[in-house]
Every structure is written in C-alpha cells, then in structure tokens.
Length: 414
Ligand SMILES: NC(=O)C1=CN([C@@H]2O[C@H](COP(=O)(O)OP(=O)(O)OC[C@H]3O[C@@H](n4cnc5c(N)ncnc54)[C@H](OP(=O)(O)O)[C@@H]3O)[C@@H](O)[C@H]2O)C=CC1
Ligand SMILES: N[C@@H](CC=O)C(=O)O
Image (cartoon, rainbow, N blue to C red; front, side, top):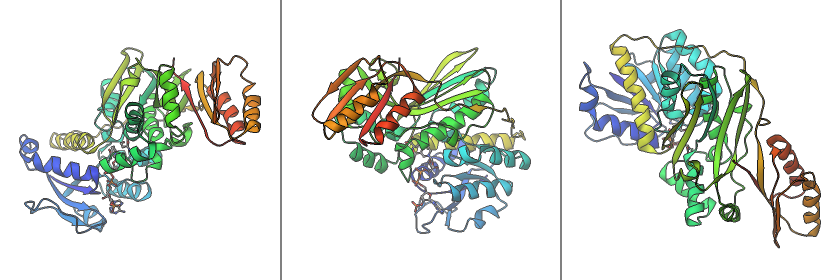
C-alpha cells in the first residue's frame, strides 16, 4: 500500500517516523507493506531516513496526484488555499485523504465531503480537532444514537500552554508563545492560535458533526487571548479563579446554535482549571449518555501523528475488507445566533492614563447597576460585573475601547 505525504514539517515528520518505525506492526495483518513512497515539500533537500530506499521528496504535486499506485494522500501542509487545492485534487483523482487541517475542513466541509462521496473515497480528519484525542470518531460512531446539544472545551494547545505557564510560573505571554512555536504546538502563523480562529474552526467542525448541519468559522463569535496580561492572571488567582480559553456551542430549540470562543474564568477546583500545558479537554452533552469528557494531548508531533496514522490504518483496513466509505448528509438548516445565549458575571480590567479616562470608563460601566466590585489603582480599573448577557457586555466594552485600548475581560464560568 503506497501513501503520499504532503508537508514534511512537525506532524509530517511524526507520521513518517511512526509509519517507518512500526513497519512490522502495521503490516502484520495486511497483505502488503505500508510505505510512504513520496513526500511533497517546498524543500527538495529535506532528508528521509537514509535506510529508506523507497521514499522520494518531490516538489511537484502532479507526481503524486498522477501516480496510480498511491491510494492514500496524507495532507499536513498547514495554511488554507494551497492545502484546500491539494485535498480537493487528491479526492478528484480518486485518492483517499487524511488531513489534520481544521482550517480547510471548517471552510470547505460540505464541498470536500461531497467530492469524497461522489468519488467513493474516504476523507478522514481525526487529528483536526483535539490532536490525539479520538473525538471525531466518537462523534461519528459511538455517540450517533445521542442527540447532542452542547459542546465545550479547551481546544487549543498553544494558548493553554501559554496560560498554564503564565499561571504556574509567572511566564511572559510572548516568550511562552515563542516556546510553543519552537516545540511545534503553534500554527505556522500563530495569529490563528491567539486570536481564536483555531478554536473556532475546531468548534465549527465539532458542531457540524454533532448538530447535523454546517457551522462555519465565520458563524462563531470569537475573542482573542492576546490582551491577557500578568496582572489579569494574578487578579483571577486572588479571586479563586484560573483563566482558560474556551470554545463553547449549544443547540437550543432544535435548530438555534449559540457559539462563543473567549477567555473564561474557572474556579481553581474545577476540572477545566486543571487541564494544563498542551492538553485539551472536550465535554459533550448527549440526551442518553449525559456529559462525557475527553482529555488528552491536543497538540504536538507524537499525539497528532498518532491520530493521523490511526486514520490511515482505518482506511487501509476498510479497503482490504472492501468496506464502502460512510457518508452522512449534514444538511440540517441551523440558525446561527452568535453569543447571545451566554451570560454571566465578568471580570474586566481597563488600563487608564488619567482621570478623564477613569471618568469615561466609570460612565460607561454605570449601565451595570448591580456591579459587585471595583478596584482602582494608579494604572488600571478592575471590575466584577453583575450577571450580563454576553453580547450586551461586548457592546459596553466596544464603547470603552472607543477611548481606551488596553482592555481585558473574561466571563466568570459558574
Ligand atoms: N502542530 C500541531 O500540534 C498540530 C497541527 N495540526 C495541523 O497539521 C497541519 C501541519 O501542521 P505542522 O506540521 O505543525 O506544520 P508545519 O508548518 O510544521 O509543516 C508544514 C510543512 O508543509 C510544508 N509546506 C507548506 N506549504 C507548502 C507548499 N505550498 N508546498 C510544499 N510544501 C509546503 C512546509 O514547508 P515550509 O516550512 O518550508 O513552509 C512544512 O514543511 C496543519 O494543518 C496544522 O493545523 C493539527 C493538530 C496539531
Ligand atoms: N496550533 C494548534 C495545533 C493543534 O491543533 C494548537 O495549538 O492546538
């Protein structure tokens, strides 16, 4: 069985190593060995294992698409446009595809699953959400008799690694982001991680599968994490909370989907607060099973490669047994309601330069008559609000930001 890899970066290398080191294990109950015969990368001089006499690095995708011996294409390129073109081309050439690209899947879910169905080939994407956590297979197979109406989770390893290090070691945001990039947790452009696109794309894929209709990244209300500072981590800690970055969606009245991606304060004792470093947690609520939680490494070479290779082996076994690719139409019409279905008390920090700014912030926050706590220091004003609907509070903060830019706020999860 010949496989081609597109992209020989962090995860591509992990997949190559995993398949090469485990040749015997993968081939035991297969009639032929599993080999990676071609790898597409920009750099033709990248090295494969010197003992590997089969695998070639190529820079021309046609050498993979037009090779009739290649039955599975594993796409691990990152980015959007080129990877979309490659996945589409591979499916159109009748190849089975495995990808970890939440960016491409969340944007082109219906088109790509449609082409896979038309060509009767497999399109698998377990690694696209939660790295090594087997959440996609669970949603598609194990939980299918449930009606799922809520998904929430810590879905990004990079930001969780940053927040954990800020909380536990007093680390600096930018330094820790650089470390996450060096380790290989972050996207090639880490804006996707810290501004919420990565979480939103993952939440879109999970919500699509769980609620039975397409939810896209652009349907999801998101706020980034880049405004968080050491003082916020400290203040949250003093109040008994830990800051986490949450993706949350819920289905109400059968077809209304509420979504949010935002920093949230969890009580220090909660399960969410104790998910640290690159680990992710995903909680699913089904009408039969109740709440289920999935926990594991959400980013990194080995965990992600494990999920990718698992998908490839699934396809290999199906091909061997002549099993058809399953195809479920996800065509329910869902109404995307933004974040108005979420509410709570908020922690708010606004840095102020002078008394005019202080007076302005106080005048805007006067709208919150029941606010609980205000602390004013030389540089900043800190609020704990009363319970407010998420979109209403966003509006108040937008007004504050017309005048003052250094602002951070997070919903207190109760
Ligand atoms: N890292 C992680 O923990 C996880 C990653 N993923 C997903 O897996 C995918 C791969 O991620 P990762 O391995 O970290 O990314 P990397 O950036 O480490 O690897 C991507 C590789 O593809 C190459 N590449 C990009 N564009 C082209 C092109 N046009 N032609 C040829 N080669 C190209 C890159 O080359 P160059 O470096 O020269 O640009 C690089 O070698 C992404 O979709 C990511 O979102 C999913 C789960 C976890
Ligand atoms: N950049 C992503 C990688 C895995 O999806 C993350 O940090 O979670």
